[in-house]
Image 1 (spheres, rainbow, N blue to C red):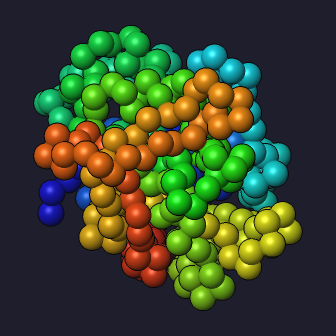
Image 2: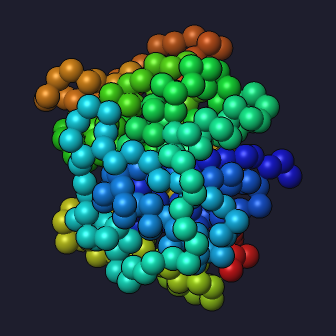
Length: 312
Ligand code: BDR
Ligand code: CA
């Protein structure tokens, strides 16, 4: 089994929390750090929520670093209606025992990527891409040193979930996303085209509920909360599971179909800001980006169940 070193940059967020539980439980991943950003809820809460998830998972060995409180050029956005006012759905928040790491998220990303062999550290970006953009501003060689950057963000054929054109993470900080996609680093993007296929149906939630562990109980609580909100706000019966997709791909790439492409982000227009222009007419050998077009939803849930069965 090869082990992938990984930094997870996120804004927990119920689906971010599920992604963290999956990553923490996977021996295929060496989680070097979790970095947080203001997104679904304000930065002070995403940072605390990451520490709550870490504690439930029994992974206090992984440092958590707080990051950007606001996007590069725009006012902070929020998605509390889909994540609960405190960000973790129905889970009663508490102050975790272990604190936050010293230094900002961008600094933690630079330190870990630059101190390890070129191309060996992957970064999963599960929220607005502000921290990674700031890290690139801080260290000009970062893009060429990075391993795969796996991103939950964007929409092509599926259309947006905030506006007709844009998905939340890219819409929240389009300038950061544009900078990361243009930086030359390798990106595999899991937009709504793929994540809307991965739905937490009743059977799939029940399979998680059947596992007797703290991480599984918390994961099931996130899934139940999302199911309720999806029914109330969107009118769909089962909620999509966005953020675990890039983590699942790192463990089991065969669960997804991806295509070589070039991705650029609209930053200028008020109407279409945050739109991801995904162009498949590229030379596959030189393309730096890939776009997920399909997911094996049952396979992703089987993976989550399998890993959580071995978790604390
Ligand atoms: C993305 O937006 C957030 O609300 C979720 O956590 C996910 O990262 C989906 O559009
Ligand atoms: Ca997220």
